[in-house]
Length: 108
Image (tube, rainbow, N blue to C red; front, top):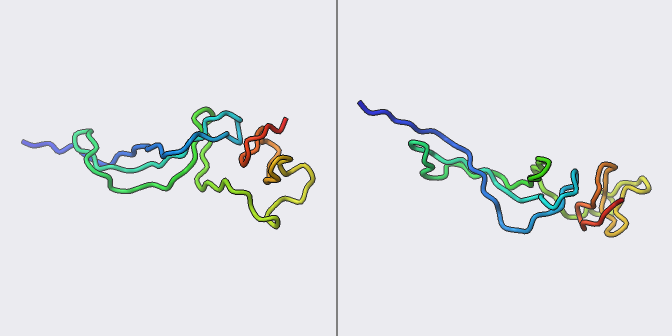
């Protein structure tokens, strides 16, 4: 009698690049990763079946940014409220940011 134990298993692959500053917690722990799915036989990954999309994940607070857009938008995309842009790079901000996600400047 033969038993076949297999299935698909996700594996997180860290992509190259230095860690960034998390906009939620302010820690330097925002890493670029990709979740790939592998065919596993007897709990050993054999070959990749599907590549995932790159995303940013904070190791400290668990924030996931599925579509990373770390470039400042055009001037028309910026918020019109005073105080909602970074004083260093003029990138758009929301009130919960402690650090600018574009240049890393402290907003305290």
